[in-house]
Image (cartoon, rainbow over all chains, first blue to last red; front, side, top):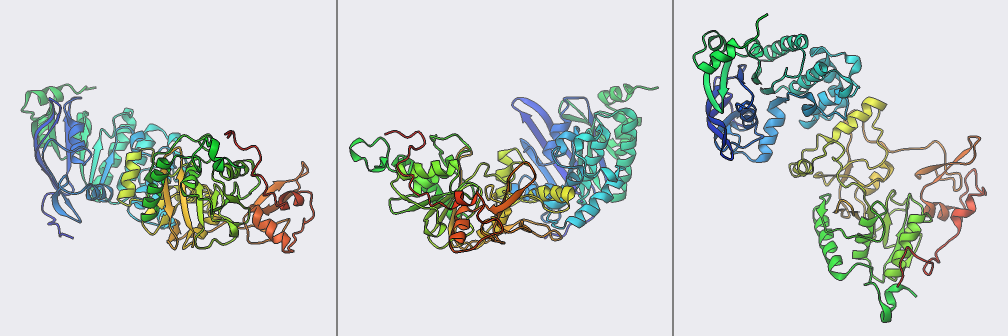
Length: 262
Length: 315
């Protein structure tokens, strides 16, 4: 097992391109992410945000470029140079992936508690009592009613399902969490509570996170740094406050000024 | 006269399948034995019975059976149920083999739901009719994904079903088709046998072959192979047990079927393995309901069905 320098980058992306046939979904994306840092990726729909996230999380092999991740077992290595088995293990042990639609990220046929406990089983826990206790603990941490631990996810509201999904993606202590529009389908008040919750959890656990969103408010609240994408290109990259308060690129200016003010 | 030895007007090849098909099935069986618990794809054929009636098991039996074999077929442990009788007649006609109901005398035993109570010995072959060979299917619908899970030995998902069971019932309640790990490598569904029978697979002296006709898979547990039923550290694997003894033979250890006797709530428990129960009664054992009207039905040694009209086979 390679010792990882705690001050090195957790994730390092080098000139990543992805093409769907002639269509460029991501062009020349490079950045570094450190431990405990939260990166927001904003941009309009179709700008390549989700494709980028899928490349970073090992689900989609990029056309060219490298995605280096500092894993516990392999050190800082290109995840696409590893075998599929190792990549799946990293994904299972060290990552979380929060889908926009909780139905994509949950198993709808098993109970909420089983959904939350699943990553522990995947990583080798074989003690029911331990899993049960930790699931209950996480139900409480994401403000779900612990009495409903054995209910199926379909009996939960959209916001509760999303919290269930967040618990499920944090219970195994990942070092990096990918979030694809985590507040996408929720109404504004639920969004606000969920954002508070996520901010607290992510800060408490010292997680690094990459959050894809088209909601500037979400980015402002959660992200340390922002990556602004348009038509597959990164048009602006910097500290969140800097990008949002003093946008340089024309598209970013448009994006910031188009936020509805009440 | 059986179909198999009517050389002048032979309508079917020996054991129904053509030689090339049997060869293909045997190759799949050999591979399955070489990799215990691994599901080997094979070119399952259309059979003269519907899917779900044992097409996988029938094809395996047809591929391995020879004129010297003694064939036994059970359904829910009983030799005298419709499906068991029909399949036994089928092989008596097309393969010209002797049939038996005694487990000890059989060289090939075809089954769906049970492993016989009598211990299996070296040289015996169990053939299982499997409806769903993939133990992970209920939790993961994608075949590509379950194949990757088997390849990389990622079996954490199977524990989800155990977790759900403990959460709902306070114990691991799954009664049949209870998942096992074969040779500490491949996760396997032991067909819908009750978990009562799972320990019989562990270090068994017999060869166990599993055939799924619709799903086109063959897998095997060779003799003397470790088979471990999955469980939790704090909820260890347990088999079913009954407070009652068999009403007919008085056996306390066997797997019991509950039989409703009337509308007044009377019922009895009898051994699900009819041949085992019959043997015990012949040997003089008697249960609390010995002499009941049902007693006579199961004891008769009805082994003369060779010439009876079989399942739609006409030469």
